[in-house]
Length: 409
Image (cartoon, rainbow, N blue to C red):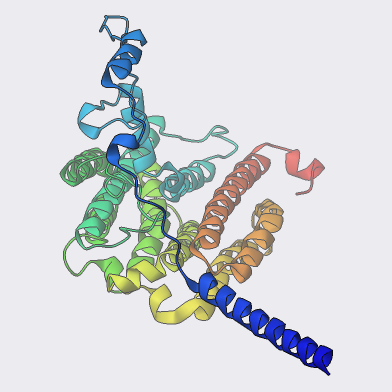
């Protein structure tokens, strides 16, 4: 009995100790142990004398400025420090006058001169009558007028906020900050006046109608973009392009070359008119696709063109009608009897025509429309050159005696 009670009491004591130990552990685990405080004098320190000794051991570094040290050239040159050379300035102006558009005025001069020359070729005058001086003067006058009109157009577009963000539109002289706007306007007026003076001298040889055509052309070139209500802003830009780059230049050049004593016959005048209409349709198509490319910026500047009024689908249809209309005219002039059938070699441009028309069907962005415009310019150039070659060969074919009987054409 005693052993049982003692054992039981010991067991109870062990249980009590175990519980108390667990409580002690819990309490001690939750307590924060603080480190004993240490006096500041007991913390080891490095004497200042040793730091000064280490500092004295380091070598002194000194930078001596010499003349051999130069500052590198800046990657971006400030505008005030930059001066363009003569060659670069000429290149800037050459790009600004947009030489890619010059065939619009050059081709009618070539065609009008060729029509007048080939009509003067006969059995008696095998070489015909070609006024080289008049041809050169006419070509120079027309090119100067176009350059002046383009520069003036760039200036007034800049003033009215047109094409300011269009990378494909203007020549870039003003928009890219290459040249001051007043200089562009001044050079445009100078080129326009020079073209007027040369054209006035040439018009004396052509007669009253040439002078009249010249006045209409100059007014159209200036009013195309000048004044607040320019012709290009009221949907008349295509009409002006048709008249100037079609009948006016072609007929004017033709009359300058013709001898006033030998007046052309009625059929000859009709053929010249029809050929000039074909070139006018090409020029209108090129100007129309140019306006299609700039339609978004034109709408923002409240400039109304046929492209902004018709929309993309009707504008494409109009482009098709204009280009195909030029081919229909030449085919109609080449098929009938006693007509220069060789003019049908202009159909050799049909592959380029197909590329241009299919490009127009797919084009909807300014970049793709710009490419279509460049293709249309190339198409008009090749079309006109083949037409000129056909007219020259046909003229000599009929003039050389006995050739038509041996070589049917």
